[in-house]
Length: 233
Ligand SMILES: NC(=O)c1ccc[n+]([C@@H]2O[C@H](COP(=O)([O-])OP(=O)(O)OC[C@H]3O[C@@H](n4cnc5c(N)ncnc54)[C@H](OP(=O)(O)O)[C@@H]3O)[C@@H](O)[C@H]2O)c1
Image 1 (cartoon, helix red, strand yellow):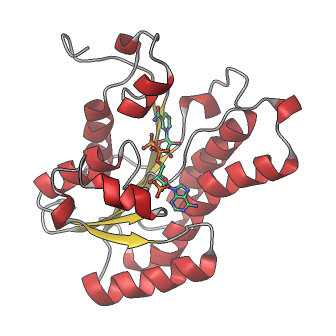
Image 2 (tube, helix red, strand yellow):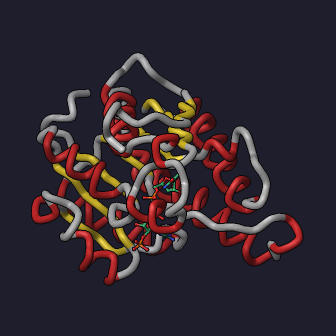
C-alpha cells in the first residue's frame, strides 16, 4: 500500500528514533499517529521532530491491555482505520545473568514484546493484505554479545512475535534488528566509540519505509549492523 494518504501508527514516537520515523512518514504524506509514555518526552519531541505539529500524539503505557484497548478506541474514533504500524516502543537495558533479577527480566519482556503484542492485537482488525507492520528487534537477539541478557531475550521475543504474526495476519509483518544506531542518545552514552561503525538513523528509516510499502517483503528479520554514508561522521 502506498504510504501517501495512509494512516500509520508509530509507537515509541518520542524516543531517539521517533522523530526520524515520524518526519519521514509525514514527508511521505501519511497521517501519522505517535504514542509516548512520559510527558517530558512529549514536551521535548517538538525540538527534534520537524513535523511534530502534524503528528497526533497519544499517551499510553503499552504494557497495560485496558489502556491499549482504550487508546485504540480513541484513535479509531479520531482517525478511522490504521493502515500500518511501526513498533519503536522499547528501550535499552544492561545486565547479565548474575545481575538481572526476575523483575528486571519480566520488565524487559514487557517493555519489548508485550508492548508490540498488545499494539498489534488491538489494531489487528484494521490491518489487511496491503498493510505493513514493522517491529524493532535487535542484532543482539540474533548474535548475543553478553551483558544485556534481559534485553536480548525481550528482543528475541519481538523477533519471534514478528514471524508468528506474519503467519497469522493478512498484513505483512517484518522486523528490523539493528546493532547500534547513530542517534544522539548513543553518542552521549558512548562518547569514545567509533561512530562510523554505527548504522545511520536515515538508513533505518529507509528500511522501515521499504518494509511498510513493498508488498513483496514479508516475515523478514532484517539485521542492520552498520555503516554510515560516506562523509557523514
Ligand atoms: N538505539 C539503538 O541503538 C537501538 C539498537 C537496536 C534496537 N533498538 C530498538 O529500536 C527501538 C527504537 O530505539 P530508540 O533508541 O528510539 O529507543 P528509545 O529512545 O529508548 O525510545 C523508546 C520509546 O519507547 C517508549 N516506551 C518505553 N516503554 C513503553 C511502554 N511501556 N509503553 C509505551 N511506550 C513505551 C518510550 O516512551 P517515553 O519516551 O515516553 O518514555 C520511547 O518513546 C527500541 O525498541 C530500541 O530498543 C535501538
